[in-house]
Length: 575
Image: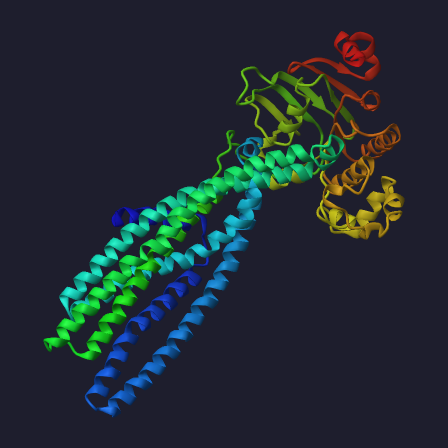
């Protein structure tokens, strides 16, 4: 049982070091300070026993000397203990910052399937609570290992005093470890369950806040509370199940400890009555018995914490080690200074969970500094083309070329600077408008120039604090049109040569739509524009329309040409 526990904890420790890398000096210092403080704590009972010994012998000079040594031991114990705490604090800061940054880096490059596997509630819980739990892990690992070494050292010392006392201490400690370990296993199991319940509750609140307008409009408060009560009931059930082994561990096993301590006293009384034990050794035995239980409790507490942290380690590991269904390799080539053309040559693509192709033998060319619109009914393949261009997916066959070079040959970060996107559902961060712009462009002069070019400078200045206006999360304090215009401006500030506009006017009023059209006509002088749209107003301004139906191109040309000659386009406009 104990061997199995050690093996299980070793696996957790190994997984921890796979996630947490770097800061080796801090880890070495943590172990060193812990070893020294524990060693001193084991020596202190021997010093106290010697003080008692020399007092009983009437040798007060030695008693004074050992008292001074005891003072120094306590002093150094506290010095190294404080050092240990300081190092733990430094390690916590380092670990927390590095892991959270790594999680943010990872989730920013994962595919859509990742969002299907990890809910927003679980992700938020992992970044906050799980990372904090992980920062405690190295301290628990150090204490766990050193407690084992301390116990071995203690047994060796006690065995030189009395073998029966050694046997009692060893047996009690062994039974204590087994019972404690059984309780810990159940605690970890139920903790894992109620943590999932917490994720579900968190996810429900997250969805409620995201859809707060729908909750108000459709009067869904009572329904959401019903959902919450169901989840809370399950949480309470698993939390209560966790408390039972917790009570047994922290209260029930105490009876064994007290019974064994009485046995030690009885043994010592018997040995003293037979002149086989002195008072100083009695004190030493009792001290080491208490120490042995304290060490065992430390072993099991740290073992329990390590096992509980295994849940956090697993959840963090699932994020950091997530393997995308489509593994995409990127090259190292620099992006071109000037865009001559973008070509799709017989491109095919099929989503992993679909039977039919999303795109079949797609071929077309996009000319620079012009507006190309991808049009077609829902599911025709428009957005898939956009995602392929953004390299979110990789085509199964055919070629996607920029200036004759395969787009997957370009450097990952370089290519991100080449192409950007404005989505139908944009997101504005909870910070000032200027700070939102500075996420992509640090030069304030360029920011103001773009806003003036897009004729939104006056709109922004009309707000309470102008560019310094702090927006609510996702800019809920702005109208949909204002939010979309700010999002378009932010994307243009990226200075990308190619911009994809994905259904940007679908929810806008006619006036704002006309403003967006003016923006598109203005920026196409400098950039290559790709529209994904079903709005006729945008189709009319496109230099080229690419008409899609069931993943195939069924027409290309300008609006008037297709309206006159293409039945698919005629049917699309009627719908």
